[in-house]
Length: 185
Image 1 (spheres, rainbow, N blue to C red):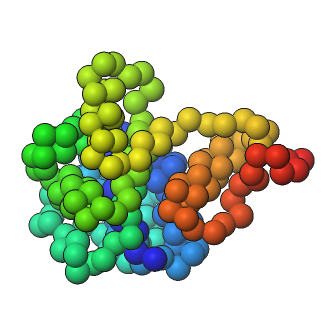
Image 2 (image 1 turned 120 degrees about the horizontal axis):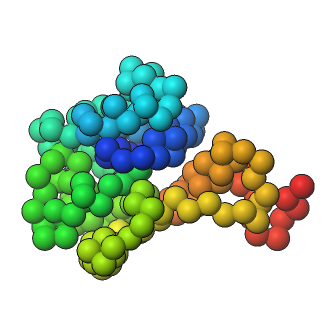
């Protein structure tokens, strides 16, 4: 399993760290592309340092690095978490500027799975246009909206449940969540 995780400068770093921890535990050869600004949000929102985060992945680069050779890396999918719509908007017009944008564009062109875990709490019409355009290009839009049927007792439960849903989209077996109708107590 060779996922690419892209971290933009948006709130929701706990979702990124949990996904990276999960991929690490599963033995994935994860590639992490991160904007330099995301490092500030990482330290502000979590107890993670950049070296600790880098320890969870096989490959790391900043968003301003040379483009990844996607065909040679043979990534199974790319997950943008948290995904700022401002960071992904240039893809709507096929004008990628950063390594993250170029990689996401290449993933879509190769008909591989691109999951956007969006962070905007309020969506203006312009945001909805970006999301719709990306969905038409083949991206899966997955805002981090919590569900409560599993009766979460903590933020950790909510984040773990969402991580399980990402793994579901990637068809990866896991036991991170209870399915609807399963005993939740």
